[in-house]
Image (cartoon, rainbow, N blue to C red):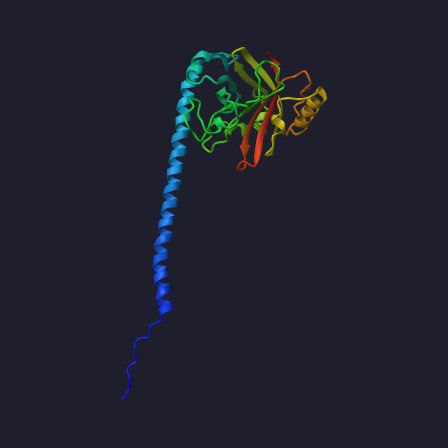
Amino acid sequence: MSKKKGKHFDSKKEINQEEKKIKIPFFFIISIIITIICIAYIIKWATESNYNKEVLEKAHESVVVETVNEEPQIVSVDFDNLKETNSETVGWIKVNNTEIDFPVVQAKDNDYYLRHSFDKSYNIAGWIFMDYRVKRDGTDKNTTIYGHNMKNGTMFTSLKNILNEEWYSNEDNLKVTYIDEKGIHLYQVFSIYQIEKETYYTNTDFNSNAEFENFINTIKGRSKVDFGIEVGIEDQILTLSTCANNNNYRVVLHAKKIEK
């Protein structure tokens, strides 16, 4: 008499199958959550970037622009009006043939405006700000102004244009305008470059003329192009800086004051 073979029960196999059934929906759920977070971040980024554009448009209502020699030029800035929005407003920066045309603020540190807009609302795009160490009493040898490199082209993103021959070969672009409550100041560009992340070029104080002269020679020597501009220890420098290549590098512009 033959025996019927009963169904063999493999407990390990059954357990593994049950684990797979559990793992598949688990990883699916995690993927969905990550996707939702990414979408939310993108929406937040876009919303805050658009908000900054609106803030900038309002700030421009305080600027008077006139056509001089067929070129639009800032002739005055109502700082009292700007300070009603932000009492930490210290100036206005404009670089020809870039999107850089902003009010400049200054906090008690270099962190606050990395994540706050001109009206001090939280914003991942931040704002354009001056190094907190700058005294603004007329004695600073190097005034540094920072801004984010945003993917949507806002803030200091267009500063990278300075490394293009089309930009730096145009003489009109090599005069940077900075306005403060003392008046309108022009700066002559003498050095442009990209460099690995560092802080040397942002130095504001120098212990001696020799130290400042060495600083000048160093930043001039870094320039992508020789502009043939003489810079000495009596000069005052304006430095603009933004990040590049996933924050591993900095794009930098140096200019010396030619009008006070």
